[in-house]
Image 1: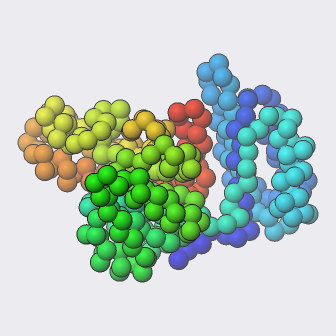
Image 2 (image 1 turned 90 degrees about the vertical axis):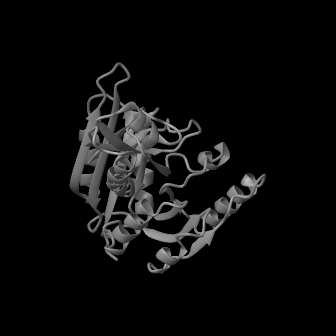
Image 3 (image 1 turned 90 degrees about the horizontal axis):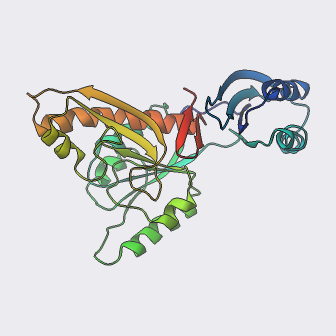
Length: 289
């Protein structure tokens, strides 16, 4: 597996927009020996005036520990600019993959992980069906089959949450996991549950989007990766893509083409999250690609 450099941290900031933020952050990092490798910034054009900043920097020449750096940044910079901020990159993220019967998104992520394209640990796969066990076994990852029995949905979800805590999971990826999560589950992992929906939201939210798209005679179909919220298919959108279709395409054709889009959209969203490229503000995202 390919790992991210251990001598690199990311500073992630969002705050009210005002002059001097970039200068103050850059000067602070320079004074403490940090070498900035990459910096991305964005300011909203609306009246809210929100500023977003992502800085990657090397830590080899730091004149203090990470804990001391954080404490000094909080006191000298963050408080002055009213920042919502954090440092990331000091530990490898851990993701759990949840799926049901469909294998295309799940196996694509596992393949990319095995190739070293996703810098993450995947300690487990969870499914409410046993159909994908043998496929997952080839990747050497434990597979947990937790069926949803009638009247026992809450018990099954409690088992999932216990497994996630046990394995110290940072990110939950719903790789076509066809079950609705409770509000308690979602609140436990705010902006850390990525779902793939097989339509170009907000079109065809909910069940059977390909069937409804076919019935409407659409000329494009798409997929949307978003953070899960209590409102079904309404969470902040991370990535979307589309493919053209025609009147000659059957419903099965739409499904086949759509699954190609689902795989790539979900993989990009997961990678950007792992690299701390996604900022959430209200129900929108800023994504530094």
